[in-house]
Amino acid sequence: MDMSFSNQALSAEYLSQEGKTLKPDVYLVPARIDNLVAKLKLESMGIKIDKLTDEQKQYSEGWTEGTS
Image (cartoon, rainbow, N blue to C red; front, side):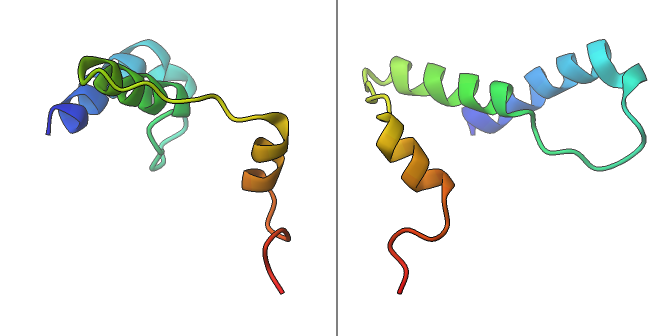
């Protein structure tokens, strides 16, 4: 629950700073906010994650690999 509250608070801050430039619509939480919250949560739990290699990034961003 702490992560959802963090996302909400940081999204509210984002809206207070950028809201005038946004058209009325439904928006996803900006990736930089979502990633920051996840990173801080993992750090608080003593968990570290590896960085993807270029090959792993390419695989995860594609849709043709691993399909028949």
